[in-house]
Each structure stands twice: as C-alpha cells, then as structure tokens.
Length: 357
Image (cartoon, rainbow, N blue to C red; front, side, top):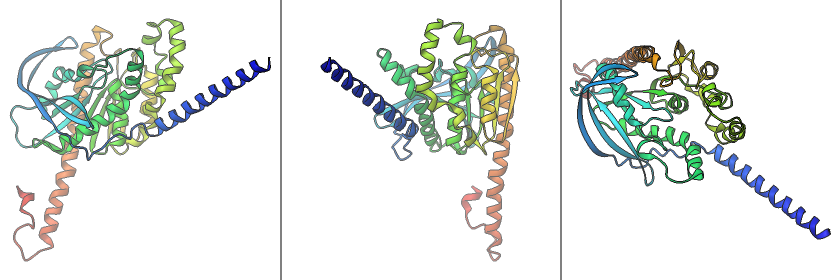
C-alpha cells in the first residue's frame, strides 16, 4: 500500500511538472509569437514566370474584363523558407504605381488575385499576394500534429511574410514605396488587422468580412451546424487555448492612425455581425464600417451582385485614400523644395535637382 502511494505521489508530481512546463512554454511562445520578422535578411527574389492576361473572367457569378501583367515570383521570409507570390501590374506604366497587398481567406490561395485584380489595375494599382502556409504551393504534408502545428503558426507566418513582401515591394523599380495598401478578406482581414497594427508602411487598409473574439467566432452558425456537437465541444476550448494569441482584438487598437474601412455582411453565418462589430469597435481611429445584405462570400450564390458592389465601393474608398496620400507626400516634397530654394536666395535653382526629376 505504501509503495502504491509513493507511485501515485511521484506520478502526480511528474504530471504537475509536465503541465507547468507546458504552460511556461506556452507563455513564452505567446510572448514571442510575432518575433520572427527580420528586415535585414536577404530577400533573394526569384522571378519564375511573366505573362500577360487579357480576357474576361467570372467573379461571384459576374463577368468582368481583366487586362494586366502577372509575375510569379518567390522571396525569402525566414532562413531557408521561401514564399511563393504573385504580382499583378498594369501593362502600360506611367511612372511608379501604388500597390495593394491582398491577404486571402483561410481556404484560398494567391491565385485569387487573378480573379479580383482587374478593377484595381484599371484604377492604377498593382496588386500582390502570397500563398499563406497550408495553402497553394505551401500545403503541409503529414498527420494531425503537422496540421495543428501549421495552424498554430499560420497567423504569425502570414503577418511576417506580408512584412517581408512589403520589404520586397519597396525595392521594386515600378512600385511607389510610399503608397502601399492592404486588402484582407475573412481570415486575411483578421491577420490584416494585426499587420496594420505592426506596419506603418501600410497607408490604408480594407478589411472585408473580418471579425474578432475567437471564442465567439467558433459559435457561428456555419460552424455549429456543420460539426457534430461532441466535436465542437471538444475542439472549441483547444482552439481558443492555441489561437487566443492571434485574436485581432488584442492588436486592433494599434492600427491608429492608419485609415481602416470595414466591409461586412449583415447576414454572415460564418463571421457573424457580432464578431464584425467587436473587431470594428476594437480598432483604432480613423475607421468606418459598411454593411451589406450578404452571407459570407462563397456561401450563397445569390449574393454575387452585392459582393461585387462591396468590392467596387471598397476600391472607390481606396482611390480616395491614395489621393490623400499623394497630396500629403508630394505636398511635403514641394514644400521642402521651396524651403531649400528660399534658404538660398542667391540661387535660382533648387538645391537638389533630384526633386525635379
């Protein structure tokens, strides 16, 4: 009996030590979750394919023309880890152009920009996107442990891969480094909120059908109705424990002073209006939100025209934001130009001819 008590005692102590060790590891992992961004690491970009696309495509049931150059490339985000990406550019360039980074949804891939980029390019923007971990060319092989590990890593990798994409775009000879914008859709809107909080090189962000509060989001009708009750009850606390560190509501206040536009579905059954309101309310100023009579894009075919209207109105807002950025940017340059001129009244030319080129 005494021997059994000792075994139980040491078994309990061992279990307690294991639990405490795991909790300490989790605390450290959460504390350093987004740390692996290194702007000094060589990008080593490699272009794989350049092609011109000039046709018509159906987007959410609506046919739209597209006319742009598509560049498939990759870059290094972490030592030994390359990120496959696409850059869509206007075919006829008249100076450097602004660029929109698109963060795709949880089940999409970088190729989705081929479907939506047409109007953005027509408005004068380039658009870039990359495959997030678990999608496209970065699908994860292996069983449940490999998938769970990748799922846990996906938010920080998405944010840091996007920051490295900004590093690349700012070196591109045809991209204006001072006019980088963001469009994030669904999962991309959640990670895009965090990215906007971290990255002040982003001048404005559109967050499409995004939400916050992971615990609330896991109770969305589209999830609960399509999952066995026992599985939902088992998985929900595990997912919340694993992914709470990536909940955008904890970072959203830091988006200020970057302008934000939230575009949400009033009938969304996957990212509910309640989750959308929570993310909006958590975000910094300036911000605005627009509601559309749609379910989550892709869940209801009849929503196509309203989804297209939503995207078009988002683009109109982005064009206005770009005008403001250009006014502030080039107004500052002109002011500096004249100040340089005034401070040297004996000279008829500005101090730096580079400003006039």
